[in-house]
Length: 245
Image (tube, rainbow, N blue to C red; front, top):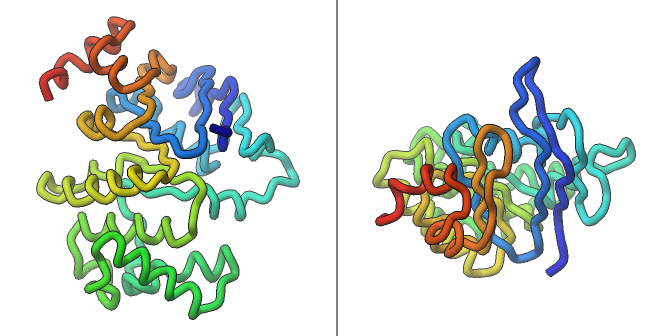
C-alpha cells in the first residue's frame, strides 16, 4: 500500500509547553488508524498539525512526498483531499443541511451548483440524513449534525479523512449512530485517521492503533497486539479498564 502521508520528527510547542515530541508515522492508502490516549496526550494537536490548523514547530509532513509547508504547496487543494470532521461539528448555522454540503464543493473544488448538489444529496442519503436537507443545524440533534458534517467532508471526495474525537460532544445514545456510519465507511475502504476514546471502535475497525502519552507515540501496532498484548506498561495501564469491553 502506498503512503498518502509521512510524518517525520514532528514537534509542536505552545510557548514553553512541548505538546508533540518527535512524532514519526505514516498513513497508507486504505488504512484506518485510531489514535488513542488520555486527554492532553497531544492527539488532537497532531491532527490539527496534519491539516495545518496548527503550524508544526519542527519536523515535516509529506503528502505524496511533497512537504505541505513548502511555500509553493497548494494548501487549499490539500485540504480538499485531506478532509476533517471536528468534535463540535462546525456546521454553518445560517445554512440548511444541503447548503452546508454544497458550499465547499463550489468554493474549493470549483464545481457547478448542479453537480455539487447531486454529490451532496448522494452523501446525505448515505449517512441517513436525506430527509433533513432543508433543516437548519439548530433543528437537528447532535448525532444528526455530526452525520451531516461527515457527509459534507465526503462530498469533497477526500483521499484521507481526519476525525477529531467525532463522538465526544454527543449524548451516549447518539454515539452509536455516528460510529455505525464510520464503520461503514471503513468497510468501503476509506482511508481514515481517527482520534477517539471509543475503544471498541479502535479495537474492531482499525487496521492500526497508535497509543499516545505525553506528546509522544508510546506504542503502535495492529489492534490485536495493542489490546491483547501491549508491550509498554503505559499502554497496559491505559487499556486495563477496557480489557473486558
